[in-house]
Image (tube, rainbow, N blue to C red):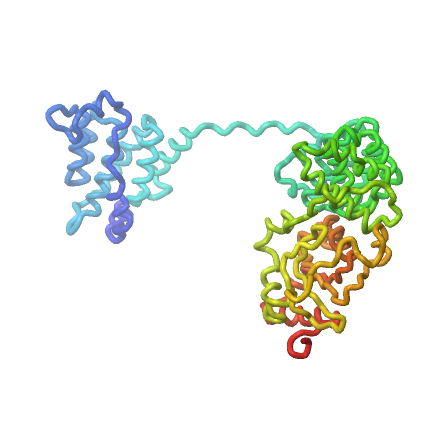
Length: 515
């Protein structure tokens, strides 16, 4: 031990740490014995305070040991950190530290070891810290005794609660209720669902499952089919507010179930519940719109003057009108045979007047900025528009105006919007012939980021597929830019070459030769 402590002379940084430790306050004495009396002794200093002053002024390790050993009735727990701190100051004194005898250090260690059971947790922590700084070995008796006392003072850890045996629906609900959803793989959910008895699959459990699939973009057919079967089997017990949550993953994940009674069941629920919960009714229709399965009877109801007047002035009137505007667009573009009521023009609002929330939240991961820079260097700023919202309210990533000969035109010289409804055909017949008489084409570059797809990366989410489908039906020529291709480009030069090949494949020209 003497050799270890003396080696500290060669490590002034360690001993300087002792000098930075503030003097230990006698917290165990309380305000009545310390706070009302002068520090460092004095005429009114008690014997306990006088001993602290003597320890702080000791001139050798032997003197420290003598003061502690000869005054057993005056020694308190806080005196031992004072002694250890003074020992460090003596060993770090310059130019001549006092001689240190191994027996003295061993006696000091034994004195601390003998009395440490009476220390409070703060004193134990301070002594342990000082002993380590002084170089006492970590496996030596002093450090081991202090460490043992420290562990003894820690509150005991409560035993882990017994995990109940969960079965079937309980296992499924427990997994889906966990905040760390993705820790439970699909096979865990499938096995839990397979083991559940019919009475265990409650609406609450199935709603949790539906929300889990939608939130994490899990297009798992077996689980989706289970939700569809549950909806059909429990049709009479489900209201539209629950049904809207069960139907949500089908539209979001662009998955039409194989269950043959799925659509007839939803049509019956809509007919029964449409006037009860307007927002839930429109949410169900939004999911079906993404699946291209709009029931005509429900459309007649939500476009009726009574329904529109009913939702006017309600807290959710704006979001309902936005959804009704999208449904009206779907009717215009995809249901040429529809002859029922439509949303009045004065009630229509832009569908998506700005980029979607997921794009705004993940903008730092998007390729939009580097694609914009590539187009700027390739075409020039005047020949494309970024984030332009075109009627009836779809936000485009990048839009180009192209002449009939394929030349990319300055956007400021052209109307970037195609007419809506398309002029080429009567109202209600846009889906059969989406072309227009405008000689200038509009090319829309569509970023297909990784989060625009279901988690398997092959199927576009329902909202993305709907936007591309409607833009195409309105006459815009779409140029998808998949994330796999964008991620494979290394730097701006490669990206410019990639964009040049994509545009030239459409027959586009720009620069001096393109006009």
